[in-house]
Image (cartoon, rainbow, N blue to C red; front, side):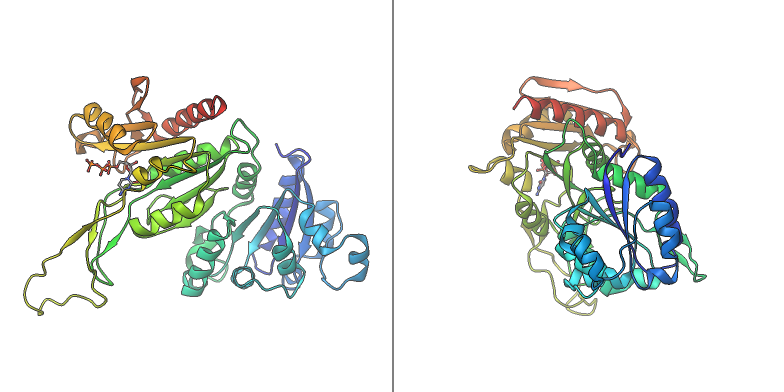
Length: 399
Ligand code: CTP
């Protein structure tokens, strides 16, 4: 439920604006108060009357509407909410947000707010895939903006692909996650996830088979329990978790820098399958077959992010959890890995191909801590995530 939560809903100009009417209805049904803001283009798709009738509140439309300024200044309006939601978030509004523009009511509110922001992008597939939108979404995520969707499917313009705004139920779920109150409320937790890509040249890289599924499930479980989650992910296949701050990286070195930028945190979970080595001097131009036969790649060691954070003298997170993906002597290897890296807990799993763990939906883990090794039965990755999140809540509660 969202009882008495205040949502400032910015409706920008896209065909998906019609879904925002249903979003308002669903939010009201769950007990939330919705203060709607309609951009000039948004009003071309849905009428102010329909929006205000459903919200049961006045629609704010113009920065220079002096009556509004007298009733509630735009600064106050931007801060009166528990969450600012932009749905649909158009390519244009996202560009304004990323660039820090403030030339209409919506963009000014987004610049002035000190409240968390969740956006539901909606646009044509080519616009979603355009390098400018890629840059803008990465900037916004880096600024702490939460993103839900878009989904893949048929588009109003007749094309097919990612760009459809998430359904109202999905947006409501993301809002609930972002506003969740639970045993981890007020806790800031870092999760690393996915593989890293280590470039050989501009078109080739070294990677691994991690899908990011377990890290994603952990981030979701922590967010549902009320934590503020920062999710630092390599280029993983898994869908990004909703209601969390996402930082996208490619390489181990970028992941280390991102992690250092996120600290301090109360707990850190290192679920990423980080490449141990990178190509020492990746080529700036594509390696050609003709140039002197088979290339000899020289490797350099990557920084160990888990060990670096575990061994910090000042500002170490209260709880540091590593993963150990092993194929032989799982417990012995994981136990010595825990000691070597200096983390508090290790979640060990057997990733031998016959277990089907890598890329699969299930996991059988052993939790190794000061108290020894505790075997968990084989279960879904979501279950593992949920149980681990509960353990984390208990541990943080007694720190
Ligand atoms: N890890 C990390 N940075 C690295 C390598 C690993 O943060 N450069 C983290 C992983 O996220 C995981 C843990 O360390 O939590 C264990 O990673 P793993 O690759 O299994 O261990 P290795 O250090 O590579 O040891 P080994 O090669 O002996 O398996």
